[in-house]
Length: 474
Ligand code: SF4
Image (cartoon, rainbow, N blue to C red; front, side):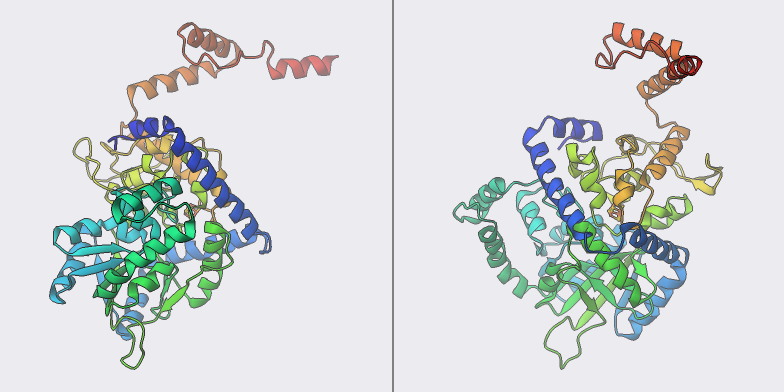
Protein backbone atom coordinates (compact mmCIF):
# COMPACT_ATOMS: atom_id res chain seq x y z
CA UNK A 1 0.00 0.00 0.00
CA UNK A 2 1.28 3.52 -0.84
CA UNK A 3 2.63 5.38 2.14
CA UNK A 4 1.07 8.84 1.86
CA UNK A 5 -2.51 9.99 1.71
CA UNK A 6 -2.06 11.65 -1.68
CA UNK A 7 -0.64 8.47 -3.21
CA UNK A 8 -3.26 6.24 -1.63
CA UNK A 9 -6.05 8.56 -2.82
CA UNK A 10 -4.59 8.63 -6.35
CA UNK A 11 -4.39 4.81 -6.36
CA UNK A 12 -8.00 4.56 -5.22
CA UNK A 13 -9.21 7.02 -7.86
CA UNK A 14 -7.49 4.97 -10.56
CA UNK A 15 -9.18 1.77 -9.33
CA UNK A 16 -12.54 1.60 -11.16
CA UNK A 17 -13.54 -1.65 -9.51
CA UNK A 18 -13.02 -0.19 -6.03
CA UNK A 19 -15.00 2.92 -6.88
CA UNK A 20 -17.89 0.88 -8.28
CA UNK A 21 -17.95 -1.23 -5.11
CA UNK A 22 -17.84 1.84 -2.87
CA UNK A 23 -20.63 3.56 -4.80
CA UNK A 24 -22.85 0.47 -4.64
CA UNK A 25 -22.19 -0.38 -0.99
CA UNK A 26 -22.53 3.13 0.40
CA UNK A 27 -25.67 3.63 -1.74
CA UNK A 28 -27.28 0.56 -0.14
CA UNK A 29 -26.33 1.75 3.35
CA UNK A 30 -27.78 5.21 2.67
CA UNK A 31 -31.05 3.66 1.51
CA UNK A 32 -31.17 1.44 4.58
CA UNK A 33 -30.59 4.42 6.85
CA UNK A 34 -33.36 6.43 5.20
CA UNK A 35 -35.78 3.51 5.51
CA UNK A 36 -34.68 2.95 9.10
CA UNK A 37 -35.74 6.43 10.18
CA UNK A 38 -39.05 6.35 8.29
CA UNK A 39 -41.05 5.17 11.32
CA UNK A 40 -38.93 6.92 13.98
CA UNK A 41 -39.42 10.26 15.71
CA UNK A 42 -38.16 13.27 13.67
CA UNK A 43 -34.40 12.83 13.19
CA UNK A 44 -33.62 16.39 14.27
CA UNK A 45 -35.24 15.73 17.69
CA UNK A 46 -33.40 12.43 18.19
CA UNK A 47 -30.14 14.03 17.08
CA UNK A 48 -30.53 16.96 19.50
CA UNK A 49 -31.34 14.64 22.42
CA UNK A 50 -28.40 12.35 21.63
CA UNK A 51 -26.04 15.27 21.23
CA UNK A 52 -27.08 16.61 24.64
CA UNK A 53 -26.44 13.20 26.23
CA UNK A 54 -23.02 12.77 24.66
CA UNK A 55 -21.96 16.34 25.48
CA UNK A 56 -23.06 15.88 29.07
CA UNK A 57 -21.03 12.64 29.30
CA UNK A 58 -17.98 14.49 28.02
CA UNK A 59 -18.37 17.33 30.52
CA UNK A 60 -18.70 14.85 33.38
CA UNK A 61 -16.15 12.40 32.00
CA UNK A 62 -13.81 12.07 35.03
CA UNK A 63 -16.74 11.59 37.43
CA UNK A 64 -18.51 9.10 35.16
CA UNK A 65 -15.36 7.04 34.62
CA UNK A 66 -14.69 6.91 38.36
CA UNK A 67 -18.27 5.82 38.97
CA UNK A 68 -17.97 3.20 36.22
CA UNK A 69 -14.81 1.81 37.77
CA UNK A 70 -16.37 1.62 41.25
CA UNK A 71 -19.54 -0.08 40.01
CA UNK A 72 -17.72 -2.48 37.70
CA UNK A 73 -15.30 -3.54 40.46
CA UNK A 74 -18.25 -4.07 42.81
CA UNK A 75 -19.59 -6.57 40.25
CA UNK A 76 -16.33 -8.46 40.08
CA UNK A 77 -14.83 -6.84 36.98
CA UNK A 78 -11.06 -6.24 36.88
CA UNK A 79 -10.59 -2.66 35.67
CA UNK A 80 -7.33 -1.53 34.08
CA UNK A 81 -6.48 2.02 32.99
CA UNK A 82 -4.31 2.09 29.88
CA UNK A 83 -2.72 5.45 29.02
CA UNK A 84 -1.67 4.15 25.60
CA UNK A 85 -1.90 1.22 23.19
CA UNK A 86 1.37 -0.38 24.29
CA UNK A 87 0.24 -0.51 27.93
CA UNK A 88 -3.11 -2.00 26.94
CA UNK A 89 -1.36 -4.70 24.91
CA UNK A 90 1.07 -5.44 27.74
CA UNK A 91 -1.82 -5.96 30.15
CA UNK A 92 -3.60 -8.37 27.79
CA UNK A 93 -0.39 -10.24 26.98
CA UNK A 94 0.50 -10.59 30.67
CA UNK A 95 -2.98 -11.93 31.33
CA UNK A 96 -2.66 -14.41 28.47
CA UNK A 97 0.72 -15.53 29.76
CA UNK A 98 -0.48 -15.90 33.35
CA UNK A 99 -3.45 -18.04 32.22
CA UNK A 100 -1.33 -20.01 29.69
CA UNK A 101 -3.52 -18.91 26.77
CA UNK A 102 -2.47 -20.17 23.32
CA UNK A 103 -5.51 -19.13 21.29
CA UNK A 104 -7.43 -15.83 21.43
CA UNK A 105 -10.65 -14.88 19.66
CA UNK A 106 -11.23 -11.20 18.85
CA UNK A 107 -14.56 -9.67 17.93
CA UNK A 108 -15.00 -6.53 15.85
CA UNK A 109 -14.02 -3.42 17.82
CA UNK A 110 -12.41 -0.13 16.86
CA UNK A 111 -10.49 0.00 20.15
CA UNK A 112 -8.99 -3.47 19.60
CA UNK A 113 -8.03 -2.47 16.06
CA UNK A 114 -6.55 0.78 17.41
CA UNK A 115 -4.14 -0.88 19.83
CA UNK A 116 -2.90 -3.34 17.19
CA UNK A 117 -3.53 -6.33 19.44
CA UNK A 118 -3.36 -8.86 16.58
CA UNK A 119 0.26 -8.05 15.89
CA UNK A 120 1.19 -8.09 19.58
CA UNK A 121 -0.42 -11.52 20.10
CA UNK A 122 1.11 -12.95 16.93
CA UNK A 123 4.55 -11.69 18.00
CA UNK A 124 4.04 -13.54 21.29
CA UNK A 125 3.19 -16.75 19.37
CA UNK A 126 -0.44 -16.67 20.44
CA UNK A 127 -2.99 -17.61 17.78
CA UNK A 128 -5.65 -15.03 16.87
CA UNK A 129 -9.02 -15.69 15.27
CA UNK A 130 -11.33 -12.88 14.18
CA UNK A 131 -15.00 -13.71 14.67
CA UNK A 132 -16.42 -10.85 12.57
CA UNK A 133 -16.91 -12.01 8.99
CA UNK A 134 -15.47 -8.80 7.54
CA UNK A 135 -12.44 -8.92 9.83
CA UNK A 136 -12.03 -12.61 9.02
CA UNK A 137 -11.81 -11.77 5.29
CA UNK A 138 -9.30 -8.99 5.95
CA UNK A 139 -7.22 -11.23 8.23
CA UNK A 140 -7.12 -13.93 5.54
CA UNK A 141 -6.17 -11.43 2.82
CA UNK A 142 -3.76 -9.48 5.03
CA UNK A 143 -5.86 -6.43 4.23
CA UNK A 144 -6.95 -3.42 6.31
CA UNK A 145 -10.45 -2.16 7.22
CA UNK A 146 -12.24 0.48 5.19
CA UNK A 147 -15.37 1.22 7.25
CA UNK A 148 -16.15 1.36 10.99
CA UNK A 149 -19.15 -1.00 10.78
CA UNK A 150 -18.51 -2.98 7.60
CA UNK A 151 -14.77 -3.45 7.70
CA UNK A 152 -14.62 -5.32 4.36
CA UNK A 153 -17.01 -2.94 2.58
CA UNK A 154 -14.54 -2.65 -0.31
CA UNK A 155 -14.58 -6.40 -1.02
CA UNK A 156 -16.82 -7.75 -3.81
CA UNK A 157 -18.31 -11.21 -3.33
CA UNK A 158 -16.48 -12.41 -6.48
CA UNK A 159 -13.17 -11.54 -4.82
CA UNK A 160 -14.26 -13.11 -1.51
CA UNK A 161 -15.12 -16.42 -3.16
CA UNK A 162 -11.74 -16.46 -4.91
CA UNK A 163 -10.00 -15.72 -1.61
CA UNK A 164 -11.86 -18.56 0.13
CA UNK A 165 -11.01 -20.99 -2.66
CA UNK A 166 -7.33 -20.04 -2.43
CA UNK A 167 -6.97 -20.06 1.35
CA UNK A 168 -9.70 -22.37 2.61
CA UNK A 169 -9.89 -24.79 -0.30
CA UNK A 170 -13.66 -24.47 -0.73
CA UNK A 171 -15.49 -24.43 -4.10
CA UNK A 172 -16.38 -21.02 -5.51
CA UNK A 173 -19.89 -19.72 -4.95
CA UNK A 174 -21.52 -16.31 -5.23
CA UNK A 175 -24.23 -17.19 -2.73
CA UNK A 176 -23.68 -14.88 0.26
CA UNK A 177 -25.29 -17.32 2.71
CA UNK A 178 -22.96 -20.12 1.57
CA UNK A 179 -19.94 -17.80 1.96
CA UNK A 180 -21.11 -16.90 5.49
CA UNK A 181 -21.54 -20.60 6.29
CA UNK A 182 -17.96 -21.27 5.22
CA UNK A 183 -16.75 -18.70 7.75
CA UNK A 184 -19.03 -20.05 10.48
CA UNK A 185 -17.72 -23.57 9.93
CA UNK A 186 -14.09 -22.42 9.92
CA UNK A 187 -14.58 -20.40 13.09
CA UNK A 188 -16.15 -23.18 15.12
CA UNK A 189 -13.04 -25.03 16.24
CA UNK A 190 -10.76 -22.04 17.09
CA UNK A 191 -13.67 -20.40 18.91
CA UNK A 192 -14.30 -23.49 21.01
CA UNK A 193 -10.59 -23.92 21.70
CA UNK A 194 -9.91 -20.29 22.68
CA UNK A 195 -9.51 -19.62 26.38
CA UNK A 196 -9.43 -15.84 26.07
CA UNK A 197 -11.72 -13.56 24.11
CA UNK A 198 -11.19 -9.86 23.43
CA UNK A 199 -13.82 -7.41 22.21
CA UNK A 200 -15.01 -3.85 22.37
CA UNK A 201 -17.76 -1.97 24.16
CA UNK A 202 -20.45 0.13 22.48
CA UNK A 203 -21.12 2.09 25.66
CA UNK A 204 -20.42 1.47 29.35
CA UNK A 205 -23.05 2.52 31.88
CA UNK A 206 -21.55 4.47 34.79
CA UNK A 207 -24.46 4.01 37.21
CA UNK A 208 -24.27 0.21 37.11
CA UNK A 209 -20.92 -0.72 35.59
CA UNK A 210 -22.73 -2.67 32.83
CA UNK A 211 -21.17 -2.95 29.38
CA UNK A 212 -23.37 -2.70 26.28
CA UNK A 213 -22.11 -4.87 23.42
CA UNK A 214 -23.76 -4.75 20.01
CA UNK A 215 -22.02 -7.14 17.64
CA UNK A 216 -23.18 -10.71 17.17
CA UNK A 217 -19.58 -11.79 17.03
CA UNK A 218 -19.10 -10.57 20.63
CA UNK A 219 -21.40 -13.41 21.68
CA UNK A 220 -19.52 -15.85 19.48
CA UNK A 221 -16.17 -14.72 20.88
CA UNK A 222 -17.38 -15.18 24.45
CA UNK A 223 -19.24 -18.41 23.74
CA UNK A 224 -16.63 -20.77 25.11
CA UNK A 225 -13.73 -18.77 26.48
CA UNK A 226 -13.71 -18.46 30.27
CA UNK A 227 -11.88 -15.11 30.23
CA UNK A 228 -13.08 -12.01 28.40
CA UNK A 229 -11.32 -8.68 27.99
CA UNK A 230 -13.43 -5.69 26.90
CA UNK A 231 -11.50 -2.69 25.57
CA UNK A 232 -13.12 0.75 25.50
CA UNK A 233 -12.01 4.33 24.90
CA UNK A 234 -12.46 6.74 27.82
CA UNK A 235 -15.26 8.48 25.92
CA UNK A 236 -17.41 5.36 25.55
CA UNK A 237 -19.26 5.92 28.80
CA UNK A 238 -22.75 7.15 29.47
CA UNK A 239 -24.44 8.06 32.73
CA UNK A 240 -27.50 5.82 32.94
CA UNK A 241 -29.06 2.70 31.51
CA UNK A 242 -31.89 4.87 30.18
CA UNK A 243 -29.38 6.62 27.88
CA UNK A 244 -28.97 3.35 25.96
CA UNK A 245 -32.66 3.42 25.04
CA UNK A 246 -31.92 6.48 22.89
CA UNK A 247 -28.35 5.85 21.77
CA UNK A 248 -28.46 2.18 20.74
CA UNK A 249 -31.49 2.44 18.39
CA UNK A 250 -30.03 5.65 16.97
CA UNK A 251 -26.77 3.85 16.29
CA UNK A 252 -28.53 0.87 14.68
CA UNK A 253 -30.75 3.02 12.43
CA UNK A 254 -27.78 5.16 11.36
CA UNK A 255 -25.49 2.21 10.72
CA UNK A 256 -27.86 -0.07 8.80
CA UNK A 257 -31.48 1.02 9.16
CA UNK A 258 -32.38 -1.42 11.94
CA UNK A 259 -34.55 -0.37 14.89
CA UNK A 260 -32.10 -2.00 17.34
CA UNK A 261 -28.70 -3.68 17.04
CA UNK A 262 -29.46 -7.35 16.25
CA UNK A 263 -27.32 -8.76 19.02
CA UNK A 264 -27.38 -6.12 21.75
CA UNK A 265 -26.13 -7.57 25.01
CA UNK A 266 -25.63 -6.12 28.49
CA UNK A 267 -22.67 -7.61 30.27
CA UNK A 268 -23.09 -6.98 33.99
CA UNK A 269 -20.08 -8.84 35.36
CA UNK A 270 -18.49 -12.28 35.23
CA UNK A 271 -20.94 -15.17 34.95
CA UNK A 272 -21.76 -16.82 38.31
CA UNK A 273 -20.72 -20.46 38.71
CA UNK A 274 -24.32 -21.73 38.43
CA UNK A 275 -24.94 -20.02 35.07
CA UNK A 276 -23.95 -22.00 31.99
CA UNK A 277 -22.99 -19.13 29.66
CA UNK A 278 -20.64 -16.19 29.90
CA UNK A 279 -17.05 -15.56 30.92
CA UNK A 280 -16.01 -16.48 34.48
CA UNK A 281 -13.41 -13.72 34.48
CA UNK A 282 -14.10 -10.29 33.05
CA UNK A 283 -11.55 -7.53 32.48
CA UNK A 284 -12.25 -3.98 31.37
CA UNK A 285 -9.42 -2.01 29.76
CA UNK A 286 -10.16 1.74 29.69
CA UNK A 287 -7.97 3.29 27.04
CA UNK A 288 -6.87 6.92 26.75
CA UNK A 289 -4.29 6.79 23.93
CA UNK A 290 -4.39 10.56 23.35
CA UNK A 291 -8.10 11.17 23.89
CA UNK A 292 -7.41 13.47 26.87
CA UNK A 293 -5.23 15.55 24.56
CA UNK A 294 -8.13 15.94 22.12
CA UNK A 295 -10.14 17.43 24.98
CA UNK A 296 -7.32 19.81 25.97
CA UNK A 297 -6.87 20.91 22.38
CA UNK A 298 -10.56 21.78 21.97
CA UNK A 299 -11.45 18.84 19.71
CA UNK A 300 -13.46 16.95 22.34
CA UNK A 301 -16.59 17.09 20.19
CA UNK A 302 -15.03 14.41 17.98
CA UNK A 303 -15.09 12.07 20.98
CA UNK A 304 -18.89 12.07 21.08
CA UNK A 305 -18.81 9.85 17.95
CA UNK A 306 -20.63 6.52 18.31
CA UNK A 307 -18.93 4.97 15.25
CA UNK A 308 -22.07 4.33 13.20
CA UNK A 309 -20.37 5.06 9.86
CA UNK A 310 -23.25 7.19 8.54
CA UNK A 311 -20.93 10.09 7.75
CA UNK A 312 -18.75 7.77 5.67
CA UNK A 313 -21.71 6.62 3.57
CA UNK A 314 -22.73 10.15 2.56
CA UNK A 315 -19.31 11.76 2.15
CA UNK A 316 -18.54 12.53 -1.53
CA UNK A 317 -14.81 12.11 -0.84
CA UNK A 318 -15.06 8.81 1.07
CA UNK A 319 -17.38 7.41 -1.60
CA UNK A 320 -14.66 7.97 -4.22
CA UNK A 321 -11.53 6.89 -2.36
CA UNK A 322 -12.73 4.58 0.45
CA UNK A 323 -11.45 4.31 3.99
CA UNK A 324 -8.07 2.76 3.22
CA UNK A 325 -6.85 5.95 1.58
CA UNK A 326 -7.27 7.86 4.85
CA UNK A 327 -4.77 5.84 6.84
CA UNK A 328 -3.17 2.44 7.07
CA UNK A 329 -6.01 1.42 9.40
CA UNK A 330 -8.88 3.02 7.51
CA UNK A 331 -10.78 6.21 8.12
CA UNK A 332 -13.52 8.54 7.00
CA UNK A 333 -14.84 12.07 7.58
CA UNK A 334 -14.63 12.03 11.39
CA UNK A 335 -11.17 10.45 11.24
CA UNK A 336 -9.99 13.35 9.07
CA UNK A 337 -10.29 15.29 12.33
CA UNK A 338 -8.84 12.79 14.79
CA UNK A 339 -6.06 11.06 12.84
CA UNK A 340 -3.84 14.10 12.13
CA UNK A 341 -4.15 15.07 15.80
CA UNK A 342 -3.56 11.59 17.15
CA UNK A 343 -1.35 9.45 14.92
CA UNK A 344 -1.38 6.93 17.81
CA UNK A 345 -4.90 6.01 16.69
CA UNK A 346 -3.58 4.57 13.48
CA UNK A 347 -0.83 2.31 12.22
CA UNK A 348 2.78 3.43 12.00
CA UNK A 349 2.99 6.18 9.43
CA UNK A 350 6.29 7.73 10.40
CA UNK A 351 6.11 11.36 11.54
CA UNK A 352 8.11 13.64 9.26
CA UNK A 353 10.21 15.01 12.09
CA UNK A 354 10.16 15.42 15.81
CA UNK A 355 6.78 16.54 17.14
CA UNK A 356 7.09 19.45 19.56
CA UNK A 357 4.99 19.54 22.71
CA UNK A 358 1.64 21.31 22.79
CA UNK A 359 1.98 25.02 23.39
CA UNK A 360 -0.49 27.34 25.11
CA UNK A 361 -2.08 29.52 22.48
CA UNK A 362 -5.22 31.48 21.85
CA UNK A 363 -7.24 29.96 19.04
CA UNK A 364 -8.58 31.72 15.98
CA UNK A 365 -12.14 31.18 17.23
CA UNK A 366 -11.38 32.70 20.62
CA UNK A 367 -11.91 29.54 22.71
CA UNK A 368 -9.20 28.98 25.31
CA UNK A 369 -7.34 25.77 24.47
CA UNK A 370 -3.89 24.38 23.90
CA UNK A 371 -2.69 24.39 20.31
CA UNK A 372 -2.01 20.80 19.24
CA UNK A 373 1.56 19.91 18.26
CA UNK A 374 0.92 19.44 14.54
CA UNK A 375 4.41 20.08 13.17
CA UNK A 376 5.35 16.98 11.19
CA UNK A 377 1.87 15.43 11.55
CA UNK A 378 1.96 12.49 9.13
CA UNK A 379 -1.69 12.77 8.15
CA UNK A 380 -1.81 16.56 7.74
CA UNK A 381 -3.49 16.39 4.29
CA UNK A 382 -6.63 14.69 5.65
CA UNK A 383 -8.53 17.82 6.82
CA UNK A 384 -8.11 19.25 3.32
CA UNK A 385 -9.70 16.16 1.76
CA UNK A 386 -13.21 17.48 2.29
CA UNK A 387 -15.62 19.56 0.26
CA UNK A 388 -17.11 20.89 3.54
CA UNK A 389 -20.54 20.16 2.06
CA UNK A 390 -21.96 19.31 5.49
CA UNK A 391 -23.57 16.01 4.44
CA UNK A 392 -21.70 14.31 7.31
CA UNK A 393 -23.07 16.51 10.08
CA UNK A 394 -26.58 16.36 8.59
CA UNK A 395 -26.73 12.57 9.10
CA UNK A 396 -24.59 12.29 12.22
CA UNK A 397 -26.86 10.88 14.96
CA UNK A 398 -25.03 12.89 17.61
CA UNK A 399 -24.80 16.03 15.48
CA UNK A 400 -21.01 16.41 15.35
CA UNK A 401 -20.17 19.51 13.31
CA UNK A 402 -17.39 17.84 11.32
CA UNK A 403 -16.92 20.72 8.80
CA UNK A 404 -16.38 23.18 11.65
CA UNK A 405 -13.78 20.92 13.25
CA UNK A 406 -12.05 20.45 9.87
CA UNK A 407 -11.87 24.20 9.28
CA UNK A 408 -10.44 24.70 12.76
CA UNK A 409 -7.87 21.96 12.17
CA UNK A 410 -6.88 23.50 8.83
CA UNK A 411 -6.21 26.72 10.72
CA UNK A 412 -4.17 24.92 13.39
CA UNK A 413 -2.17 23.12 10.70
CA UNK A 414 -1.44 26.40 8.92
CA UNK A 415 -0.41 27.98 12.24
CA UNK A 416 1.97 25.07 12.80
CA UNK A 417 3.51 25.67 9.37
CA UNK A 418 1.93 22.53 7.94
CA UNK A 419 0.80 24.02 4.67
CA UNK A 420 2.76 23.05 1.58
CA UNK A 421 4.25 25.72 -0.70
CA UNK A 422 1.78 24.80 -3.47
CA UNK A 423 -1.20 25.16 -1.10
CA UNK A 424 0.16 28.51 0.10
CA UNK A 425 0.48 29.71 -3.50
CA UNK A 426 -3.07 28.61 -4.34
CA UNK A 427 -4.40 30.31 -1.24
CA UNK A 428 -2.70 33.59 -2.18
CA UNK A 429 -3.94 33.36 -5.75
CA UNK A 430 -7.46 32.62 -4.53
CA UNK A 431 -7.44 35.55 -2.11
CA UNK A 432 -6.21 37.87 -4.85
CA UNK A 433 -8.68 36.62 -7.46
CA UNK A 434 -11.66 36.86 -5.15
CA UNK A 435 -11.24 40.58 -4.31
CA UNK A 436 -13.45 41.77 -7.16
CA UNK A 437 -14.84 40.80 -10.55
CA UNK A 438 -11.91 42.24 -12.52
CA UNK A 439 -9.37 40.28 -10.48
CA UNK A 440 -11.41 37.11 -10.94
CA UNK A 441 -11.36 37.54 -14.71
CA UNK A 442 -7.61 38.20 -14.63
CA UNK A 443 -7.04 35.07 -12.49
CA UNK A 444 -9.17 33.05 -14.90
CA UNK A 445 -7.14 34.26 -17.91
CA UNK A 446 -3.89 33.52 -16.07
CA UNK A 447 -4.83 29.99 -15.09
CA UNK A 448 -6.16 29.14 -18.55
CA UNK A 449 -3.05 30.45 -20.27
CA UNK A 450 -0.96 28.35 -17.86
CA UNK A 451 -3.21 25.38 -18.77
CA UNK A 452 -4.36 25.07 -15.18
CA UNK A 453 -8.03 24.57 -14.32
CA UNK A 454 -8.90 24.54 -18.04
CA UNK A 455 -12.45 23.38 -17.21
CA UNK A 456 -13.12 26.37 -14.95
CA UNK A 457 -16.11 28.12 -16.53
CA UNK A 458 -15.71 31.62 -17.90
CA UNK A 459 -16.82 34.20 -15.27
CA UNK A 460 -19.96 36.09 -16.27
CA UNK A 461 -19.27 39.29 -18.19
CA UNK A 462 -21.47 41.28 -15.80
CA UNK A 463 -21.48 40.88 -12.01
CA UNK A 464 -24.64 39.97 -10.11
CA UNK A 465 -24.71 43.39 -8.48
CA UNK A 466 -24.43 45.15 -11.84
CA UNK A 467 -27.23 43.03 -13.29
CA UNK A 468 -29.39 43.64 -10.23
CA UNK A 469 -28.76 47.39 -10.38
CA UNK A 470 -29.54 47.46 -14.12
CA UNK A 471 -32.78 45.60 -13.49
CA UNK A 472 -33.85 47.98 -10.73
CA UNK A 473 -33.02 51.00 -12.86
CA UNK A 474 -35.15 49.72 -15.72
S1 SF4 B 1 -19.14 11.20 13.30
FE1 SF4 B 1 -21.34 10.85 13.58
S2 SF4 B 1 -22.00 9.91 11.64
FE2 SF4 B 1 -19.75 9.74 11.72
S3 SF4 B 1 -19.36 7.73 12.59
FE3 SF4 B 1 -19.36 9.21 14.29
S4 SF4 B 1 -21.47 9.20 15.07
FE4 SF4 B 1 -21.52 8.23 13.06
